Amino acid sequence: MINLETNSINSDLNPWKSDFPIFDNNLSEKPLVFLDSAASAQKPNIVINTVRDFYESEYANIHRGVYSLSAKATESYESARKKVSNFIGASRVEEIIFTKSATESINLVANSWGIQNLTSQDEILITTMEHHANIVPWHLLRERTGVKIRSVKLDKEGYLDLDHFHELLNPKTKLVAITQTSNALGVNNPIPDIIKAAHAINARVLVDGCQGIVHNSVNVQELDADFYVFSGHKLYGPSGIGVLYGKYELLESMPPYQGGGDMIVTVTTEESTYTVPPFKFEAGTPPIASAVGLGAAITFIEEIGIDVIATHENKLLKYATSLLQDSNLITLFAPTTNKAGIISFIYEDIHPHDIGTILDQEGIAVRVGHHCAQPTMQHFGITGTVRASLGLYNTMDDIDSLVNGLDKVKEIFS
Amino acid sequence: MTDLRDLYQEVILDHGKSPRNFGLLETKTSDAHGHNPLCGDTVTIYIEVDGKLIKDVTFEGKGCAISIASASLMTDILKGKQITEAQKLFDLFHAMVSEDSKDIDSYTQTEDLEKLNVLAGVRNYPMRVKCATLPWHAFNAAIAKGSKEVTTE
View 1 (cartoon, rainbow over the protein chains, first blue to last red):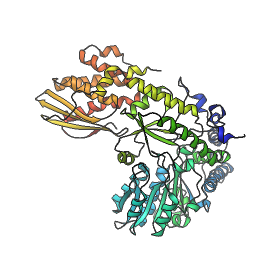
View 2 (view 1 turned 30 degrees about the horizontal axis):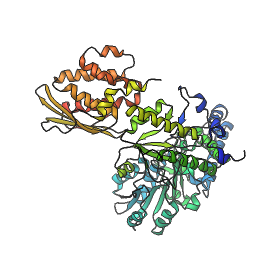
View 3 (view 1 turned 180 degrees about the vertical axis):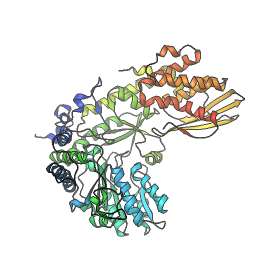
């Protein structure tokens, strides 16, 4: 295990790829070159096995049965919550709410905290680099409350325009909803500075950590984030599980988002009383096995070390960027420093969907189009890009395959 | 593995790069906008109809090689057709690009279908069928009314 950090981008020395069965079982003729982890990451054996073992030997509904199997399932589910809590540095485990996705986490905040606290006199500050999950819930909230939404511009390169941020931030701003890392460009935002500035005028901050948590170690207390959301499936965990972190006193003051079983104290046909966080926000049977699987994914990441993963991805990013920059036919979007393992580009005037189809025939999976971030595309005056995003199973061979695949595109379109 | 050249035939690349009948139609009697939310591609079809006769068709838009080539080929073929003929062609074209069971040869009986047959390779790429059919949906909408937007979703 010596020098893994320095050698892992070499295909023969990547110690993690063999943990991911999809690379052995993929049915297509060519080996899978998976460069779409920013959309959803592949799953390691430990996650797949944990979910299977849970269904095979521990499964029952949680928080309900007096029988031992239900108690065991409850223990596994709550132990996953504890893992998430430790992973992001929450001050107490009750600050972790399981949802079905990061999207649901943001909708929860909009529908609960937003409806309770925002009026037509207030403003929400978002940015041009948000993905749709951190835009549309606020548009829906505006329809119900009249709250105003203002958006921070990007500069020419694709960084957040901090001057514009400070210009827009004003006493009417009650919430700043911002991504830690752009999903379309990979750009990291200066979240600690943004939170400090927002708190100085008593605004709350929701951080969308969908991309950020995959590439950075996160401590919500150090950040002083009011809300932090992410999804399990981008973190090598199962789909169908998301997380909402909220400061406990905020969660305590917020009304329930959905009603149903497990979030009540007493119910009569006339009225209900609600229980405390996190259960107040987890109505109905939650995605139990997916939560347990997310716990396993966190164990997997912690054993490797998020910093080791980030170093690995940064090396690959540098390698890919230097190869792609060599071609004068390729336009790279966003700068090459202070970013996560995401490379967004266009290739001459060839439409990204045509490129995606041709790369797919070479076994290369990339995302093409607007990446559910249309305002980011509008900023650059384009409708879409090709996006290659990196995970810990990627190697230099994958980048070489991408470059060779682009030669194939050129061959067909020349 | 299907051969990419079946999808990206020379005719498609040619129409994709140099689309025919591209631009606003001054004499239009109707138009319709088509939009594919998945990729952001857009197309606007302009038609000049006299009674049941399609006198002229043009289009404007942004899109991939497949959607631009499909719009270009479509406008070429529909010019001078009766509306009923156009709708029959759409049905056959739709089947050609989306139904696996049909034999490609069965579509090549007429000159028009033979021309459209260059797009038949799309059937092997389910994610791309909508690229080929978007202009036809927009054409149908232009015939049906006028300027109501259609989407592929």
